[in-house]
Amino acid sequence: MNIRRALATAVAAAVTAPVVILSAGPALADTKPAAQAQTQKKPTVEELEKAAAAAKKAYEDAQAKEKAARKVLDDLDSPANPLRAAYVAADKAADKATADKAVADKALTDAQFELEKLPADATPEDRDAKKKAVDEAKKAADKAALDQTRAKADLKAAADALGDARVKAAQEIDKAQQEVAKALAAKEAADKALADAKKEAEDPTCDYTAKLTTVATGLPSKIVAGTTTDFSLRVANGTGRTLDKVWPFTYLHATDKSGYKVTDDLLHLQWSMGASGGWKDLDKVHRTGVITNLRDGGHVDVKLRLKVDAKAPAGPGLAFVAGDYKNADGSCGGSPDLTEYGFEILAAGAKPGQVDPAKPGKGKANTPDNKPQGTTSSTPLNPTTGTLAATGSSSATPKLALAGGAAVVAGAGALLAVRRRRTDG
Image: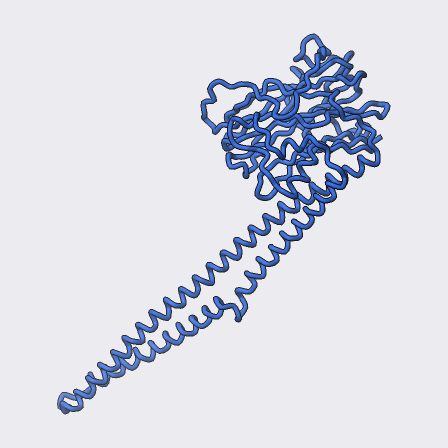
C-alpha cells in the first residue's frame, strides 16, 4: 500500500503557527503568502511528528480551558462565591423588608382604627394621643415602604450581577467548546498526515512527478452568487505509457471577506461524461468519474459545472485540481501537488463586468503539447482509445483515493487541503 500526500506541510505549519492562506480581494490568484510557498516542500516524518505533538498539546490545552470555563459556572452555585453570597443576602434582606412593611402597615391600620373608634365625648388629651400614635405609625410605615423598595432594588442588582456572570460563563464554555472542536480537527489532520507519511516511507512505490497534469480551463475569475458556470478539467498523460485508470480530483474552498467564515457548502460542483452522461455529483473524496485507457500524449477534458448558492457571501475562493492513476500491473502515481486557481465570489445580483479566466495561483500549469484522444479536445474519449466512466463501488475497483479534506484552523480560517492517495496492490 502506498500513501501520497499533497500540501501536508500546510497541516504541519498551520497546527504550530496558523496563518491565513486565503486573502479577500480580486488579487487572490496573484497572492502567494509565505506559508503557501512552503506547501511545495515535502515535510519529513520528523517535522510531522513535531506538528502532531504540537496539535496534541493544543487540543489538551483547549480541553483544559473548557474544564476551567465549566468550573467558573459551577462555582456560581457555591455559597462561598461572592456573587452568590451577595444574592442570598439581598434576598434575605428583601424578605425581611417585606415582612417589616407588613408589620408597619398593620400598626398604622390599628392606630387609625383606635383613633376612629374614640367616642364623641373623648377628651382632647385622648384624641391628641391617638393622632400622635397614627402619625408615628405612618412614619414607620413610610420608612418600611422605602426600605422595601431599596431592598428590592438591591436584590435585582444582585440577581442581575449573578445572571450576567452566568451568561458570561456560558459564553466562555461555548467558546471553549468551539476551540476544542477546532483543535481536535487540527490534531486529527496532523495525525493523519503523520500516519500517511510513515506508510509512504514504508512503501514508496508510486511515481508522483509532473507527468500527469491537470489544468482547469474556462473557470472565471469572478462568479456571482446565485449563478451557474461551466468549465472543464483537462487531464493530460505525459508518463510515457498508457494509463489504465486515472482519477481526476477537484476541491472547492471559499470564505467570506473576513477569511474566517468557511462557505464551502454553498459551492455545488458536478461533472459530466458528455451529451449522453448527464450531470453527476463528485464522490465523497471529490473525484469525478474514472478515466480508463488514457494513452501517452493524450488528454481528456472532463466537463464541470459549478453552482454558487445565492446565499453565498462575497469573498475569495479557490479551486484545487489534481489527478492520480493506477495500472493493472500495480504501478501508480499522479500529480505531485495540487494546482490551485483563485476566483472571487460576488454577492447575488452584482454586475461582474469584464471577467477574465482564473489563473493558477502557484507553480506552473504544466501544459505539455499533448494531443487529444478524440476528434476534438472537448469530446470524451471513445471506447477504442480511452473512456471516462462514472466511479462505482465495485470491489474490483482499485482503492486509489484522493481523500480531499479541509481543516479550518482556529483563528485563521485557512484551508488545509490535504489529499491522501492510496493504492492497494
